[in-house]
Amino acid sequence: MSILREGEKLEDLQRNNLKIIQKKDAYRFSTDAVLLAHFVKLSKEDAMVVDLGTGSGILPILLSALYPRAAFVGIEIQEELADMAKRSVELNGLENSVQIIHGDLRRITDYLKPNCADTVVTNPPYIPKDGGLVSPNRSIALAKQEILCSLEDIFYAANRILKGRGSMFMIHRPQRLGDLCCLGRKYDLEPKGMRFVHPKAGREAHMVLIEFVKNSLPGMKVFPPLVVLKENGKYTQEVEEMYYGEKGQ
Amino acid sequence: MSILREGEKLEDLQRNNLKIIQKKDAYRFSTDAVLLAHFVKLSKEDAMVVDLGTGSGILPILLSALYPRAAFVGIEIQEELADMAKRSVELNGLENSVQIIHGDLRRITDYLKPNCADTVVTNPPYIPKDGGLVSPNRSIALAKQEILCSLEDIFYAANRILKGRGSMFMIHRPQRLGDLCCLGRKYDLEPKGMRFVHPKAGREAHMVLIEFVKNSLPGMKVFPPLVVLKENGKYTQEVEEMYYGEKGQ
Image (cartoon, rainbow over all chains, first blue to last red; front, side):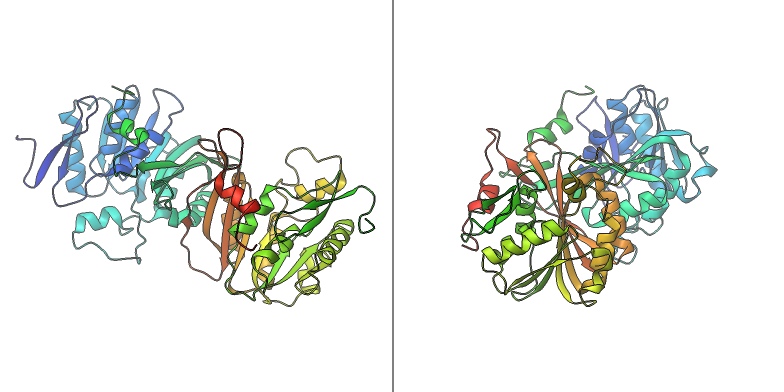
């Protein structure tokens, strides 16, 4: 298929006949994007939604199925990934609702007007610059580690482009919760809702879904936990429905 | 029984034959104290443990059953409650392991030496000074609302008396999580472990158990959730065992 470049493959998203181009040996979207897409709640159907660090474009593509009237902008610093995301958008015929920008979110207002977004979504790199091993694959390292974009850069960018009372929905590791709450306050993005993701019942959480609201008073809600796998290693019904469920189909 | 004053009653703690004096119409200990006592992990058997705002003395009395070799100090600003706590300590023959101080934790070093404590435990007032209705009962209002003691006062006191690497174990409302994380950082008490308490499965958390460690690097663990009641309204097995279980008996 001519839309694919060397080393790329096409993955079926099992929803609305959507497909996405991914690299075989580089960063690929994971369950995280699916969980985050289903945690997002838009304040209105025709919201303007910005994905900070969109990678393969998976979040706007998944969200476009859940919110067909919303407008999405995904910004990605890796040129190759941004190009791949653009081709995925075309492949799905989503040019009218999803725009991919190859750019640096640290200079977000070079591309987008301040206070233009109703909602921000982001699945940022999880690992601090100096923490853990950098992947020898540069593309994976940039997507997973805070090399070109720190957690603070994300909060700065969200603060710049969100309208007052606008929400940022993020998925991250629970290990960073202290950072997440304190950076949120620093950038006037109050943590308001959290849902912890446990790989199986009775295990420690390995991810957290978190909503920040701009210019909001303190007051956190902690929703019931989300368990990914049953004891037999298969998806729980809730996650199964996120992957293959009714909504948006 | 002469140990009781007017308006007081004796409650059986169902553990080690322990009993506690409570006021009929004022602040009484709740499930929170039981959950917190079981969340506490002492770094050594003969630890020096301080309870900030001990109320009826319930935490040191419960903990003395779980950790018979530890030394406990409870500080309480309400004279009547402190007096009641002292009588409960005597009633249980715990004078050698539990000391109750009638004092103001905002001046903690008037009573205790800096860096004297291995562990701090606290079940502080949940409601901000200006939030919600004050109870018309002064004793309840002081125990539940940040009138004589703000959340920040607790962190200040813990920072003063804890040794380096010492832990503070707290139970609080999830609504305050942003405050808890940011105050922790301000007073060099890094949030390191959390367990959310849900009244029933599938409901939002109504309490959070949280451990802060002094002079520690960031890195949070989120343990499996604790569910209090089964669908039929009876305690889950885990909570049942906290109330009536083997440990410490």
